[in-house]
Image 1 (cartoon, rainbow, N blue to C red):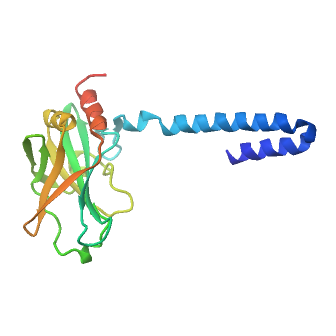
Image 2: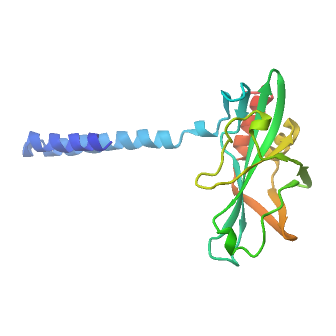
Image 3: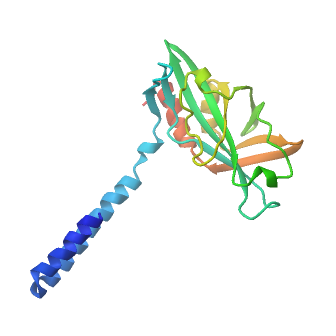
Length: 216
């Protein structure tokens, strides 16, 4: 884009004063075209679509949600804008026709753990409040490789958060995607903690559910 703007400016100088008006019109048209193209790229919904790939480490076919759900727990007692987060990514792993559905949760924070008055949040079980139901998921471990995923998916960038792997089923994933209210419930040192939706990607989760259900 910078090269395009420079070429337009150089053309105006070479053409001389008699072409200044035409150059301005051309420059405005070119800038409008570039802005339109960039807007189209930014607004592209392709990132919301589920991804499917053959995992090189496990030889399994992995289907993963395009964007994960992110939940946040405010920590105003520590500092302004302090939050703890849970990133929740859904995936399906097909190994020789056997399909496993999993939820991978990452607990992370913008606050140094040493500044917190409580310990790490309880991750087993993982309790998801979905409308009037409480979904209790049992922790399977901290290795996505054990369920057929070589590289953890949707790990929060810039944070060394361990993946927490929970087995689930397609019906539960659909219920979560279609729920009107969602929250993650946990505790730390017997102190209840509620994580509310921070980045609402239920539509992306529903896209994965439809793919796994054979819907277009």
